[in-house]
Length: 214
Image (cartoon, rainbow, N blue to C red; front, side):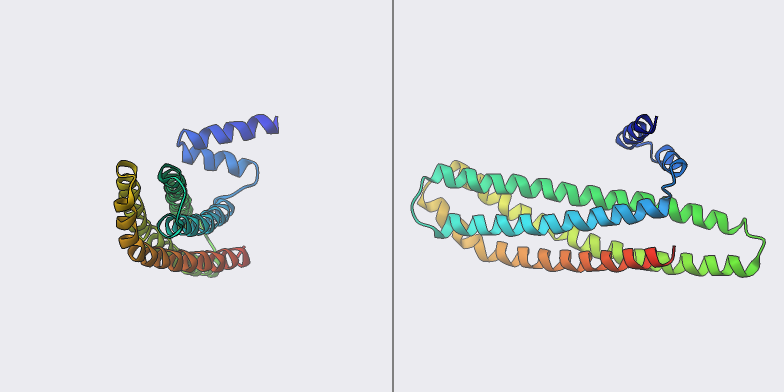
């Protein structure tokens, strides 16, 4: 029975019925706060994986422009593989951030509504204070994640342009063009990695604070 329920939950998630999904999850003891922690962890992990992927892509790019010898077709295929993997990592990061936003909005909406159900003024005030602090922490976390997300496109744009150029110009001229863009790509990747690390660190802080307040 539990297996069937979990399968149903997965289907609800895939079809985008988030409110029904959250209600079903609460029935098995997983509340929105717990889901938020889980999704922030997933978003953090996706950014960590993206960091490694973009490092790999930069290293592959460097090897294409600096290492002598080898067939240009093979060097193109290797660089294109890294570019496609980087695009997938970017999609994962964006999807994870969107999932965090969805459950956070649902949690805060429910929390605000339930403040009106208190009869004890001191408990209501304590809960309202906790809500305010959690929202403040969340806004900072989301700001960090969005800042990292904005750094992704400049990296992908350079990679995409150079991969396309190399695809149609498998010659020394194409390699020369890649060499000219290496410093630009390196600078963009360095900025992206720094922003992602800040987002990862902020996610760790947010998770600890949310777990402490439970």
